[in-house]
Image (cartoon, rainbow, N blue to C red; front, side, top):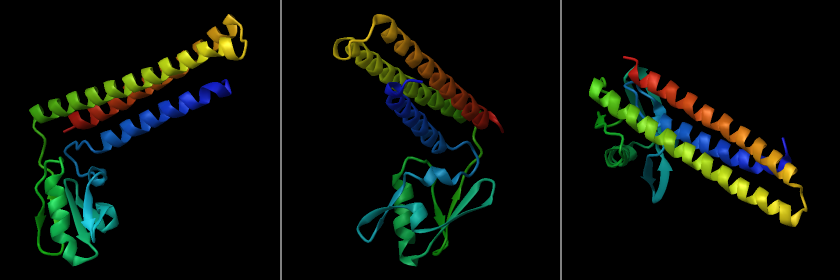
Length: 184
């Protein structure tokens, strides 16, 4: 592949990686510690990820426990979880916070699948925008680098193949997440 296309492929990979982190935050009825990745706790005035203020464990399939290293942070962690959009009410015994994931209803599973499809489509749009930017830059090469039209067409074809491969990866990722959500 042409080195001029590598920067576009890197951007597409970043879009795909971002989609993976978005999917990790969608709960599928089972306890997944990645759901806490975006939640920040006020740790002495600094927003800090939950994973950096305590021990996260999964004692059962649908329960996450968080044991802050500093016991004074229990209320801060609970507050941060309640203010987040994960939709789970934390319980606490004063030292450990428990997040119990309810069994997903069929209706909720369908809603989550719609969300998965929406995020996949957003990722595809981002990848297509990267392709469009790449094609625009490639067209400019005819003026600046004195490239032939055939060379420009070859570069555009290579970029299209890269785009197609990333779109396929997005579809595979979405299908895997949908399967995970629909598994009871």
